[in-house]
Image (cartoon, rainbow, N blue to C red; front, side, top):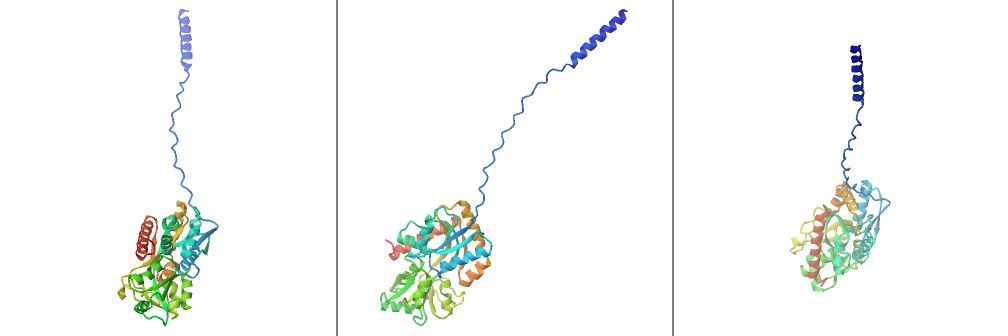
Length: 347
């Protein structure tokens, strides 16, 4: 009996302990692990800019001149090459030796869809006329080529540069030479004939090389300063004779100009050529400038540009943009400023 009672008591104790052991303490809730703050992602890069609608492509000179031919060639290459999906509309804003068109573009501040051809006439004209449209007041995009300068006369008038110079000495001021601007590359070349060659010529201005050619063939002027591309047709037709080129490098590789001497080879210390570039209004966006640089880099390599335009018309291939372009144009500014001061164009 005692043994049975003891066994019952033992059994009850075991059940009691089992019950206590089965009672789990409330689980300690751990503090939630601290998660790191989400990494701050960089602001997304601005979407690549692309034009839409129409591109206002301004040529600051009249139809038919070198800048006009250049602008229309560029527009065609961009379209045919598929480099720009927008519609490119070339318009001539001539007058005041390129300053009317340049001022028009200058007034389109922040317009990413406005472009213009840019040549030394605009840079030099701005210096000569002390305008607000200096080279660094607009957005410079690139340079696409260099081009030579020549002196052309009506066939049957002067046979050599020396003959023209001697005639001008004997008839002071009566030999009239046409160009497109005051203080531009044409003017500098013409005045070099006076300051370096000892000639005594009178310089007059027209809106474009086409107007100069019309005046020359009409007998209203005695000579004109032309790029080879501006006089090739008349030279090959026998209507115009080229007396010299102004760069130290000869242009004998250009059809029709095989026998043209350089002024330097004739004993005159002249070495001068021009550039052809593209610019836009002030404050174009960085994205737009990058877009246009890319487009024109493709134009610069297209055979329709390199062969059908540059090689055919005797231009020198080039592609320059960014810091290199700005350094070059500052040097051009300094050169034109010094030349204009030396020649008395500015005080």
